[in-house]
Image 1 (cartoon, rainbow, N blue to C red):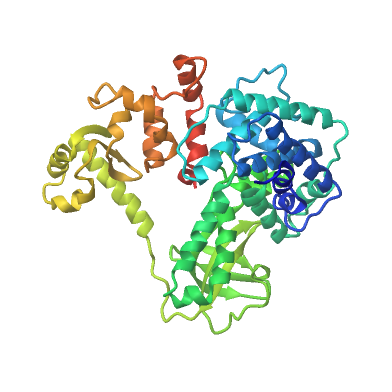
Image 2: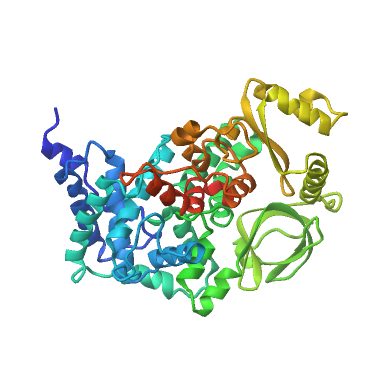
Amino acid sequence: MKSKFQKSIKNRIYQVDWQNTRPVGIISSSDAYFVNLSNKILSIFNEKSVAEIFSIQSQRNIAINVAAYFEDVISGFGLWQAFTSIHKTMYGKYLPFLDLNNEVYVPDEINSEDVQFLIWAELQRYDIDNEVHRFLNPENPMIFLLANVIYDLLDQEYETAPANDAIYKYIHQTKLTDDIITTRELLGWLHYDSYLSMSYPRLKLKSEIEELRSNKNNEFYRENFGTLSYAMEKIGIFSRNCSPLAIKAKDWLAQIFDGTPKAKMIEAIDFKQIDNYNIVDFDNEYLTIVNAENEKLIVSLDSLGKQPEIKGNNSIMCSLFYFNDFWHVNGFASFSKLDKELDNDNTKSKIKENNKLTYDYIIKKIKKPISYYADSKDLIKVLTAIFPDSDNNRIFPDKFKSYSNFILFVHPEIGLSFYPILASHVCDPKNPYYDKDVVEHEGLSVLTGLYEIPKELIEYLIDNNLLKNIALKSLHGETYGKKQLQDNIRFVVRFFQPRLYS
């Protein structure tokens, strides 16, 4: 049996743990202080006898994240203030769930409510990452108690804590126009590794790399695994969302720079996924390329690193990001010689057009965007009536035939879709299959991603008040818990399902 001393040594935070939350290569004289502060926060878990409730990893993550939040506020990095400012713009208040006293809450100083939110966010992300379906009330008494005890510690340290000038200068004094690589790395830190990034971006990247690694029979993947992994990491910075609000890193950074010329420069950043381009011209500085839609792009050759072998090739496959008036290669580029020009691949526009046509056609038939069905037989009858010339097996897969309580949903962006079980959750006078007991016990799962529902359907249900009975469990009663959830319902979807907003 391990002694308390052995356990305390094992469950300590070290410099290497703290360094994982830093921008690459930045070591500061204040790091030792914040590592020590992290361990002081960690010790509170043992003092308050909550170690059995919080996993060891959650305790460590909370300690590091709260210490990093404290460092952010006293050093003036702007990460937390930008997050709360964006939340206020989106939802009219600085933080979700918590009842903030506007006379006491100070946005640019430390607050117990900030700590309370960080504890809740880490616990929920830990559950999500480990596929545990649990929704904690942010006003949970244990979270509230811990937040206040930790806040008291921070308050005691506030006047004497050292600012981290190195990271402040990295964020605010970098000459973005001079160094696009540093700008991208700054965005990458916000996206993947800051205390507010949340775990989703790193886990998504890990999943994609593991999928790439599993393609052992693909010779190209095997030979270029390192290059492709690097490209995936750089592409993710621009293509996926981060932070509790599921926003792009560039939008977060633009808010950090709010009111400065840098903000407009960051807002103008654009991105293109890996695609093929025809090379139409080049000189010592720039490469002119055209995609299948005949869009002309001017690419900085500096972003390709060493002078590329352009002569003799007429095509480039790459990902791009737009910054400071030019496009830049992002993580991956491959030159080749094609025998013919790129065909105009308008697949995406055709899909969008077909979805709109499908929507218009079905609305004429059934007169409404959403409808409800007891079982697969009822739904198949309707689908057969809508598409009389289609084979039943094509319009309704066998795997859904044993399910019940279907929703049929049509939308101009996604066309037609249907979802089993979901009718039990939708509080609509026209829905005879709504089940209050199901909503009471399982309603939150509609918002947290247990069902794979597109953003268009989630937003339709919220906009039309069809999920109005979903509530949090609260010590203050059902009415309070319902208001608590409904007032923050859009944030909940963003927090638990960031993939919907990529």
